[in-house]
Image: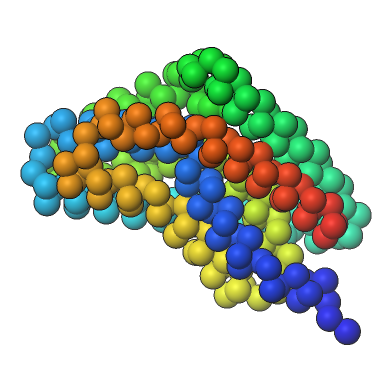
Length: 245
């Protein structure tokens, strides 16, 4: 007889990849990346230096998220080891996801009416945004583009996790049920590769001459569909956790 873990393995890879991609387009994170790409382009760096900096930033983001995921995954497996504990944790996560789903749809509706970022509830606080900008400006003025951008990716990802963690934590709860350490590692890698795909695209466009104003305009036009996609994702994750608890 198939175990619960094995029975859900068919859709796990698709779910994890889709979640990572949607999280990568999360407006509260994606808009920050466009600002960072604009700062880098305005810093007078040559195209090659911009490509190196963008690659290093994405690598730093990927490694940081992987390390965070491995630590949280182990904690999640420990906490949800017992059936009762897993049921409680999954129920609480499902409730939180249903609330986030409602807030995401409400953000999309509010932004559709007002067209100003101030009406969005699920976004990084202004203080954190200013801190991210100051970290980027300080990092990319350094002589070593690669290592400065790698450190910047690490610092910005930690700060940005206040927003992106809303998707990452419930995904880790699903991954924690998967058998085998290598399988879990592979799922984490797939999630994070999908997560940094939009980052790679933004830095590549910036290096090819796309200005921050144009990319920012495109980011604003995608707020409604990306917020709606997040709302659907939160709802799907909540239902999966309820079914698998």
